[in-house]
Image (tube, rainbow, N blue to C red; front, side, top):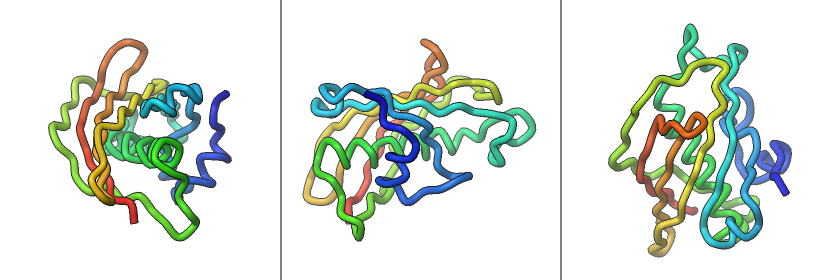
Length: 141
């Protein structure tokens, strides 16, 4: 059962125009195994689309937001006073340009946790074409 944008907004503090996840399409079994797949539809109405191009940095931010959702479901639900902060980016690679009209498929994999630091890897695709990969860490506070 997909996780809707209203449920995502209950987990993440982000709001328009910086909520960069439209829907989570992972099954409960995938979430329980530490994997999450999300969708972001890039439109010309997004205030962050410059001309017709989507800024590459926002691909990393969308992966970080998806990892916050995964941390909530896979590790433990965060209370209202807890946050998951983007702590580091490692081996970020950009392979293609994202334009208005593209649908991004964001795939996140849990790697490990040490105390409050959680490590993830992620891939952003348009269809089967990889446009971005990265490893990153988030801090749960």
